[in-house]
Amino acid sequence: MPRNALYAQSGGVTPVINASASGVIEAALARPDAIGKLYLAHHGIVGALNEVLIDAASLTPAQRAALPVSPGGAFGSCRHKLKREEEFDRLVALFAEYDIGYFFYNGGGDSADTCLKVSQLARERGLDLVAVHVPKTIDNDLPVTDCSPGFGSVAKYLATSIQETGLDVSAMAPTSTKVFIMEVMGRHAGWLAAAAGLASHERRLPPHIILVPEIAFDTERFVADVQKMVAEYGYCSIVASEGIHYADGKFVADSGTTDAFGHAQLGGVAVVLADLVKNRAGFKVHWAVPDFLQRAARHLASQVDLEQAVAVGREAVDLALAGKGGVMPAIVRTSSRPYAWKIEPAPLEQVANTEKKMPREYLDESGYRLTEAGREYFFPLIQGEALPPFINGLPLMADWRFEMLPKRLPAFKA
Image (cartoon, rainbow, N blue to C red):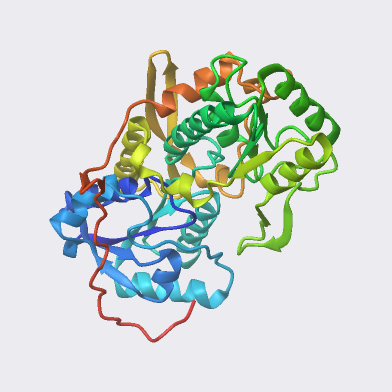
């Protein structure tokens, strides 16, 4: 009898994480000779530990069709670091009870760590289990892979947003707001902030200043450059990564708290920068924090991003059935002009707990604008418009209510 499989989503969602789920589900259900049942954990590894499971075969045709075009995490996500021995024991019991031979964990760097631990657990406990990490993250900081599914769509949204807001500010600048600041995600890597620079194909166009974690923030230089941009163009449009920091490594906007994985909780850098500009330069400032908007904006998804998201999900199943566990299907760029890519397995030891920084050469000497090398990297990832279906003027949203399977194991609280 074919072994069963378990799929779960983890970490912050993306505009296309459900497309990867679709890739896994469709590939798995198409192989009844190799995979018996596909179980979906509700809310990630926490759902697996608490035995809150969905039989993928119970999904309606409408739900399956909606996955590739829907934002959010259809099956619920989580942030949870496996630490306790009883959690590992619980997973072993779950895998045994449901005859799980394949485990697919769809997430970013921290999720790669969880998937690696499950793979190591299988080896240590002598389990017949193949664990494969399905990549996603809007931060684009997963190593080995050329890009991370989710990033291209968010890059497209942010470049569009700074382009549109630039027109707004320039129209009002003579008598009102002269500086606009958009804060984007990115704790240690400035991929998203830099990608917003695609909107500026001329020096006079926004964003005029890009601030990334890879380049230390200098208060005096920043204020002086804002004044210079306003003097030259009449206004100044800025994109700042949430994780920009001073030369001593201190975050410009550190809340003093941490998440489940020990990462500093950031947010509010736009407010700090706005106060600087207002108090030191005297300009009227507006700021915005796209926050969840950027990672939920499925209505402006990149077609390339969507295709890659589905492809890594399908490839994860193929890798698992080939017995290649402890790996992640990585996207390998074979050409930028024209853009071409393929997928190859990457060992999770090279992925987990490692962040890929943006190359310095993607920004010019000032650190404020994209170079040709940066444009060549970013532009292919935002190509194509993968519009969702609309009804009554709004994107059609799926009904993600599911029938959970009855529990078989003793009660457990993760």
